[in-house]
Length: 131
Length: 266
Image 1 (cartoon, helix red, strand yellow):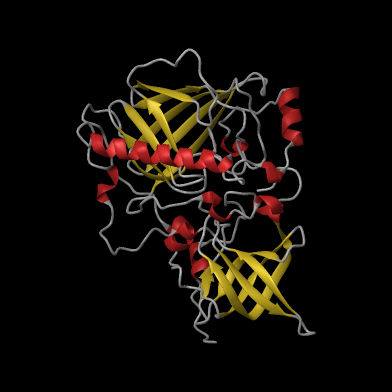
Image 2 (tube, each protein chain N blue to C red):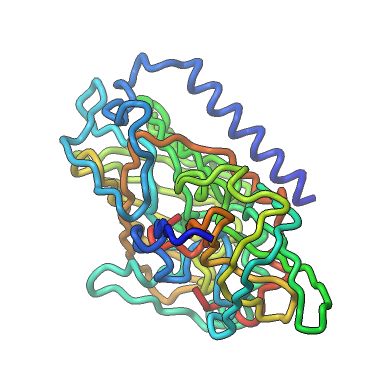
């Protein structure tokens, strides 16, 4: 994975206030339950509203594979921040950092995605600028 | 049921937009974001984008033209964040009981229903103004629209309760004063679940002091839910060079079923 890091999210000053999607962030996700999955495989991308979503297969130390669902911002917010529907594709190896769902589902809010080319992508719906 | 409601609203919004386009710009200036950056210029990057500057655009009759693509201008997480100096939110026992009972999973906005007033979805919205109407076209929460009649008519006598109510506007100098009644009691003012009844009456004062700024002061009057009226103010920012995009919230809604606990968290 290349060392080149495109820190778009940091440059935008986002990832500050977990406010702003069409739903309460804090009622669905727990910032104190961070998730980090490294080099996991994207199994599906849903370029849909109200949130784009991607799914990754995660293998534990015993070799068991589970599939996790990660919420992104809406396609509109992602597009306005440089994404396209092809930014993440099935089969891509990515690293995902975010917050886990409060209810214990295999569900997370993606705050940072490091894509297959090593770029760090703006990801979350929790931007601070009203989007 | 919900699906039918949403598709009906979307159809109506599309019709409203089409009618306005047919009506043409005869009584309106060129769109106020005509000064948008040329194609190929960097797209808006949210918070990093400065508020556009310039004089207040005006209609042919000299009145301010509020047209443009805006972001913000209302509460999202907490209506109290916009309280004007000296104002306070004082719930009646009825209002407190409603608010205390609300669960995050039941927030209409999380369930892809309209925001009502004064709440604003965290997505852009466009104002289209003619000499007789002001339309708000919302990208979110559900591709809906709001209409304000500025042709001098009065409120109808027997209104059915609706999400955006019946809005009539009149000029007070350069301020557009929008009076709205006829609300349903289904929408929340914010993530916290501030309530209202069908008695809700809002008086909004719209000002565009310069090109890039739309100030919206809203007086909330609802003696069923609040012991006294209160005023809030939020400011929208012009987003030149951007367009509304499709946002069909019900397409893949997976959030409401995972929302936990009482309303209140941002």
